[in-house]
Length: 123
Image (cartoon, rainbow, N blue to C red; front, side, top):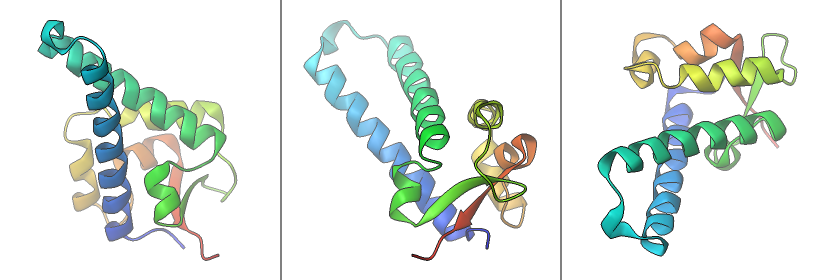
């Protein structure tokens, strides 16, 4: 069964808060007075890209998906390929992509373009 919009929203919220907290801690540990806005944005985008690519490829789930009992699968409900996860992650950076969940029933653009979906697992 595909995950609900509410679960999908909490996946996004948990993952983004977690990544932002980690980046904040890294900046405080480093040299915050010399960090520019551009460096902060590039670091955030790069870290989010690596985070989603690694967690969804190796575990089929990010921290948010783990906490909401959801999993990334392909159209056949199997583990997605590295290419599919790479495309899924890349598509997350399309402008207004998070709003695509509001425009569609349950699937976002990064799901549709990569041939993946997020499913609820009851365990």
